[in-house]
Length: 238
Image 1 (cartoon, rainbow, N blue to C red):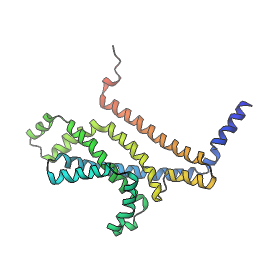
Image 2 (cartoon, rainbow, N blue to C red):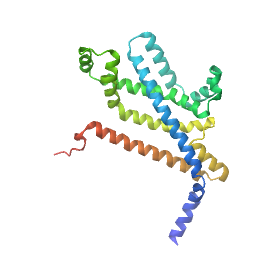
Image 3 (cartoon, one colour):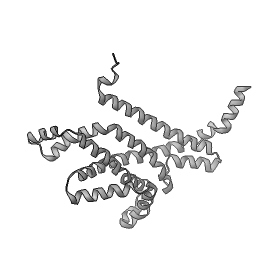
Image 4 (cartoon, rainbow, N blue to C red):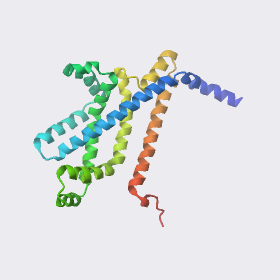
C-alpha cells in the first residue's frame, strides 16, 4: 500500500509517460543547445585570445578599444545584448536577415562570453614566467612563434579549469536564446507545458538536462586538474 501511494504521489508530481512523448523534442532542443554552446565556445576563445593580446600589447590604440569592449559587455545584461544583436545586427548588415535565429544567438553569446574568456586567458599569459619568454627570444623566436609555442600553450594549461567553469556558465546562458525563438532545451520544456499544462514535467526535465551537462563538465574539470597536477595529486600523505 505504501509503495502504491508513493508511486501515485510521484506520478502526480512527475509523470514519466508524458515526458516520454516529448523525448524527440527534448533531443532536438538539446542538439541546438549544444550546437550554440559549442560554436560560441570556439569563437569566444578565439576572440578572447585576441582581446587578451590587445590588452597586454601596451599599444594604446589596441588597449583602449579592448578595455572599452570588456567593460561594456561586463556592465550590461546578456538578455539586452541578445536583443541588440537580434534586432540590430540585421539593420547594420542586411545579409543577417537571412540568418537563422540560432546563428544570431551564437553571435550574441560569442560577443558576451569573449571578454570573460579574455580575462581568464590574460591571467594565464601573465602567469607564464618571464624567463621562458626571454629564453625564447634568446634563441631567435619571433613574437608569433613565442606566442604559439611558449606563451599560449602554458597560458591555456594554467587556466583550463577556469575556462571549463566559464564553459559551464555559457551552457546555462544558452537558455536565454529561447526568447528569440531558438528551439533549445528550455523551449522544449515550454512546449510540453503549453500543450499538457504540466510545468513539473516540462521544467524539471529541463533542470535535469542542465544538471547533467554541468556534472559532466565538473567531472571533466576535475580530470583536467588531476592531469595537470601530475602524479603528486593522488599521492597519499605519509
